[in-house]
Length: 344
Image (cartoon, rainbow, N blue to C red):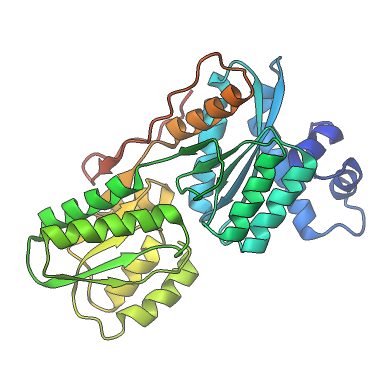
């Protein structure tokens, strides 16, 4: 495993001991594949942070714990690395732990490791479950500030929520569908990645209430639980589309859109309008091909700037409290797809 960083830096980035990192790098015995993967990921993160590593100033380590499809967690990591050069009051070192599906035990174990390792702040995207909320409050009690990203955790003492206005997103999806298909009969398919992501729940509740007002004759059926990943979403869809009549619209709140489209196409029930979330790599290709009608997008670069600024203010490294605004929703169509731009 080639690298150009001190063992101590790799250990700090990975959260492992220097002895463990040394064994992994030198391919010694009794090193698990998971440990090797963590060391390799840490080296990749350090390569992305070299400009920050060369800077002078107070060094702060911030941890990201994200349950999301890889396509989304990569966008978060890319946005974080791109805004870091603009954070001038400290050297911010992000450490990422992301999985497509994380159990309660996975999340609480990750937060426990962070508490033992030490951190200057944790940014988390996780399900709103009692055990996870308890683990978050334990971090906060230990003096580690927590920020929730794109989906909130109720009753916790997190210092900020950063992300889009989920209720507004749901109402926007209902408006777009109503304007496209009109007030007639038909079936609308909705899909969430998981029942316990509060952000997606807020989208769904607002969507159904607004759609019921705009198009009361439409029937809504649900195909949730695929975690936004292809295999699980395909499995869920196979059970839903069997014998399903024509679907006039789809509102996908949690991803897995290729799997949803493929299942509907095989069933001969492709929708007239399909509304999805986030202009990630997959959705960019789908809307460019005309398979998605609209993508409700928000700028992760702004979100990550807000995350770092909130942490820095907590540590009294910003003199003025940042104005953390909820992200504005951008309605992307096949006609206004923004180019991919390397920012900062």
